[in-house]
Image (cartoon, rainbow, N blue to C red; front, top):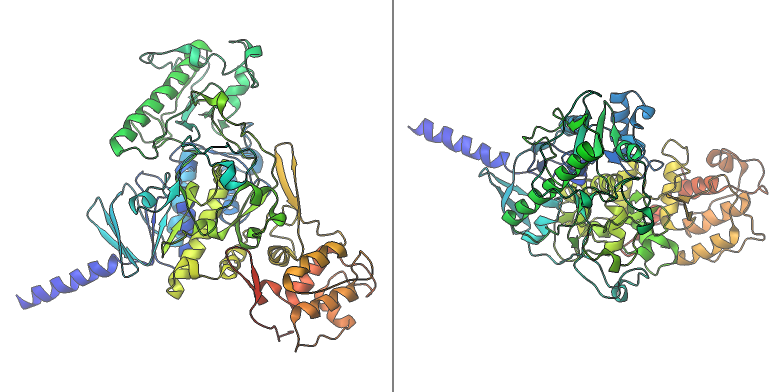
Length: 617
């Protein structure tokens, strides 16, 4: 009997230990999946909880398998995921099957890739698992699941689609449009409201051959007038303010590999206005049913009224009874009130703001500010939020950290941004990259037994740079460039700054690495570092660059000018009087003064010298 009791105690002790982990992530969407992978690769023990059968969220479970944005800002886990897709399909060109994106794929393929990445990283992922309760005691989180398991961890990440963990914990958050009086955003409405973006229940159709008739039964209360202006030829275009594309082009909008078609059409298609953020589970289920019915009515319209009978609901994509995705595509969520709130002014004019949030960048994006409101009943009375011109941008770390709650991180679409900014940060690559940043932050916090708000920003950025991820949105300096990390670090100090612009749909910020250095701009940028620097001309030469390096390096550490020193640090060295390029100045400053580390930065972008660099080797 004693041996049985002893054995029972040992087993019970083992079970308790098995429930303990460093990080719990709730929601395996685009952010949650990548947060788990990065945290595990950084050495943390991670448990990832997901209600559906697949990881990936909007990438997979919602069927939005066409990537928008960051095609020229491909780095970190976004780059790794994209390369895995290219390997599967046979190259980058094989992903360009539709015209909405340069990266299109089958949802089930992406789910398999993400599952393999999670497994390889050693993540404990628990699918078809939901949360029953969350509590915190003495800084430790306790999560009880519907399967009656109890998990404990130091760090908790809310990566749910609608910010449900924040709501459960009664944390402060925002929903809907912000007032321009509060945010200072010129195109925001004067008064705030609770209007969110339209959601979409995506359908994946398959071409079953020209002779096939895959028309679904006529939906109850079917109204074809809802869809008559979805493409050219069915309604009077003079009554619309939107482009009517040819119907064949509409269908090919989201064409996927292997004769599949993603139906995610915003022009009188399957966008629908349903604000289910604060709804109960039962009410959400009713809303989901309504969204599905709207999508099926659009599918019937495509098949019956437009003649695409050969396109039927794909039977080999989602393991669901109705062949539809697991979840709807939510474009908007609760938005946390974080350490900082990233607004449109921070995004569009980063170097002109009082708070230099770009210095704290952890994820980048380049998609326009794109809001879907056409399905809202009174959308004509809303401000025009469609494609406001912005450059590519860096998201600040403080947008992932709540203002007051300790040991907590927020990811996905619930980060601390304004409603307007959510129109671009909601896109898949940004959610992937901010998820990677959340994972890096969580792993560092767990390792040092501190709250995420106490972690040094530069330490998080270092971890991301080690993973070849952008922290500054300089698309003309890729991760394979010899100066990439130096330019990213010096760019994040603000000593050398990029130039942003909007070119049609493309939003860019360029560093211009091969250009000479504008000494006047450089002198202005150095004021934040308490350095007065006035070169003789507006073009900086190598000798002056070395003098600047000495100033940044600080007193007590004498650098002597020598040709050998310059040759060792600058591959393009010719003569001291030659003008230095921006790339080479970044490399020189990074190698011998290291302002990225010798000046700390807080969540508001303020800098302070913390150490002196005495090592010239």
